[in-house]
Image (cartoon, rainbow, N blue to C red):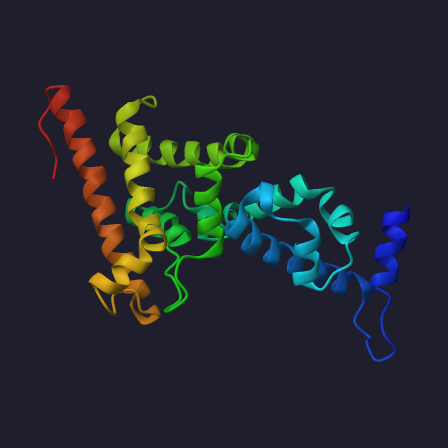
Length: 238
């Protein structure tokens, strides 16, 4: 009750502010999450303080408890942010039965192709996930199982359909990892790419880059399909 009263007091509109409380609350939550991603990425879960996050977001210290429950809940929400963004993107319908392989790969890969903003380096969400892998907090395992695994299984089902596999095996897993990693590397290795290939990551080139990656993806799927046919002793198809 005290936490809610403190937050309600913090959200009480000034005389000149006619913004609905619900909208201001949503903005406050988003601001907290934005600063949490940045600070957790810089310092890690253990060293980041909730007070510092609240000060950076311009929010009452009670707001974290109100919106996220506690520091661990805020950290989990920060880790989930990019995963939820993928789920709300073109990924949502990438495996519709009526789509061609190229159409499915285009939707799948566009969900993971985040070209870095010039001069800003690696995205804070990407840095946060790297830090979590280097300094595990225990939160990521549950997130992978609950949120990433269902997405991964959908990718496997799509690939199985296109290579003629009856069940998931290591080769199909490797193909799924290769397709996603090929796209994700543009956000992970963006700073290196910007030096090695100036202009490649310009926003105007995003669709060109994506279409080329989709073509590479089609080639990988075709290669896996041909390998399976050869293993069964049947002639490969073009």
